[in-house]
Amino acid sequence: MSRHTIVHRNSDSSVLLNSANHTLHKKVIQLSLEETISELEKELTAKEKRQDEVLQKSREVIRSCAKAIRHIHTEDYAEAEKLAEELDSEVKKLAKVAGEDFHHIAQNA
Image (cartoon, rainbow, N blue to C red; front, side):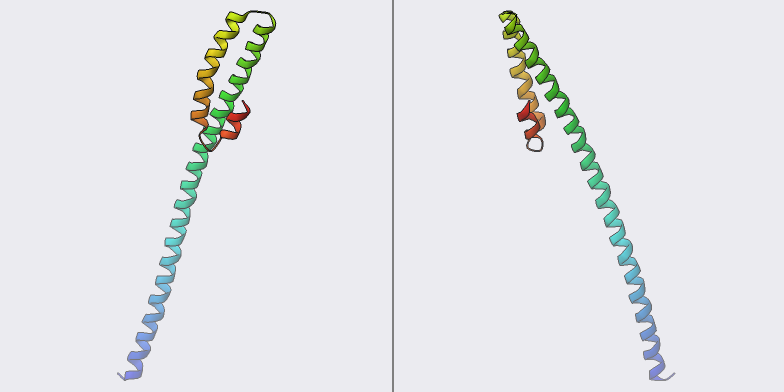
């Protein structure tokens, strides 16, 4: 075998090796991308669940505020005071669940 043939074979092997590395690299990137998308989906699903919980608690607080106001208008101050105490606890829970992500929703309650 001539030296040229050996170099040529090495060159072909190198091309095949580079091609295999490129394919492997593409697969690794694709897997990495799929894993990243999967993680993002999990994070967004959890965040959406928390947002739904914050919205629900926010609505409950608003309804309780309306009830307390009605009790004040009907001069049922004892019931209004009772609701106000419950609301204080509920607002603290709401703020805790809302955290930094959804504080704008909790503030509107």
